[in-house]
Image 1 (cartoon, rainbow, N blue to C red):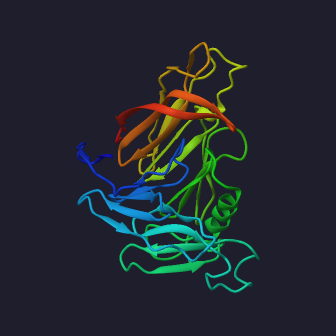
Image 2 (cartoon, rainbow, N blue to C red):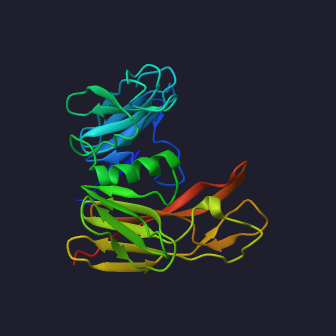
Image 3 (cartoon, one colour):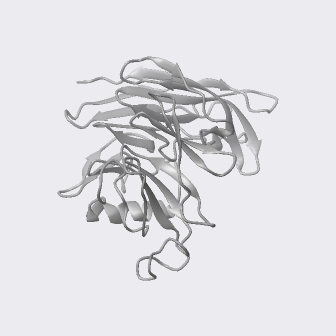
Length: 291
């Protein structure tokens, strides 16, 4: 595994424990790295927390089971997962029958606590998300992962605008702020004072019957402190599809860490039971403007 330090620009290798690695995903549907730590999933259905600075791994305790779904997201202070609703200790008044509990692992104290899905925790610091945004996030979490999933950071929620295209920024107080931009926003990422999103499509959206040359997209950035906004056309790639011909397209997903922007461009995709899936990719990186 290669870890890139967005602050120094240095790369270092880290060797996970045997049988452990990053979860397979076509896009960043869950946050699996934060504050120099990486969440790893292992073949024995356990999880490890890898410290990118030291290379040491910590085995995470299993959430209450046996019907738990393990750990899925990490913040600066906590790791979030789901636990079996029958044994996590919540009353029927705290969550709906059969509804999974939220498991929370405290990285500092190593304690595991449980709460109802409606009690959306802040993974970066102790306490819950404010009530206004908690309702929004609980509804989105119940809908499941999607490329258009909203992003939360430090009392601010970024999500696709309800009317038209662009992004809606919603805080704990005050009126929403609308960022008008062409195209449907995908892979919204709000972290460290920077908001990014793209208007391309994931590999799963590839449709052989529709296109020979069917897509382009832009990577957008918005600096919270200054309101400075940029957009950059994403590169078109010759994509190997497993079919007799190759496609020229813009498929993939974006994310950012600190001031570094990343575009994970599909290079090889393969047909499966649920459409096309990403096989190989090329990663493009650039530094965001700081104005």
